[in-house]
Length: 318
Image 1 (cartoon, rainbow, N blue to C red):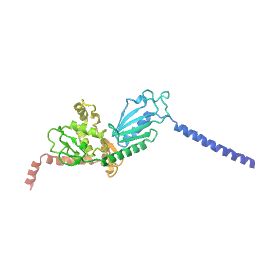
Image 2: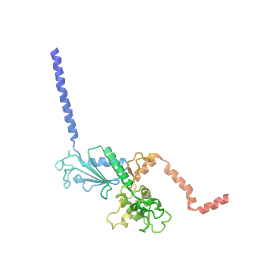
Image 3: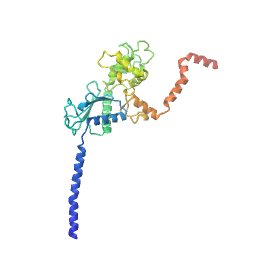
Image 4: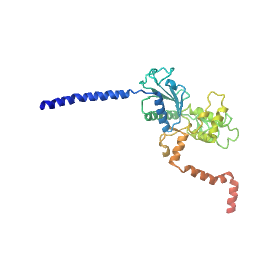
């Protein structure tokens, strides 16, 4: 009896390590699952979109497993480091090592030598990738803003701004203004919104320290121009190398959001978000805000449109 119990104990002692080894082998096999760049790209873009960022993906090199996309101010390049991307069939095991982990490189701004560059593994959780990129962009922007020098001044209000952050709202090169004065009454003749859109996009994709006030101007232009603004801009600037017409939509225009002291309605968004995402967040937080604004506008619009008649009516009442 005693010998049998000992034998059973010995069997259990031998069996346990075997189970551990089997579990370890299974875990390694799980880690060695094929990784398709198309899946990594899709999950990554979905995570950024959920955080509010505007995303745009190019499919020019998709067949070779090399994915180009844009997320707000950042250009994104996803691929396998050891893969010859000039070939085709990246999802074919005969063409590529599907177990090789792809990498994702983020660089911003996207049209010049980047101020921020970050590379992450494609196997990281998409939410973690978004958090890392947002932190890098916010830190990079803060560092650049801290080095700004007000070496120029608005032609209307005289406030100091970096010279490159003052833009042309008319056809006069000498009349460069700040965001607060773009629609000032002093700018009556020679309005040139096409020029303003191109200059704004030049800042948006080349300077992470873009003044946040320009976002309000861009939003107003996008809303006023609606779907016609893109073609108008492209037609006006078809002779230049790069025209930003496709960018001028509420789903693609993006806004820098401060990490602290932001309205609670925007707490769920990242370091930046599209105009559409910001509007949706505000509407969810304040569902009656637009109706209240329209009612207020209807009440005061006649008085704003013809103040003299309102004044005469008030005097007669008195």
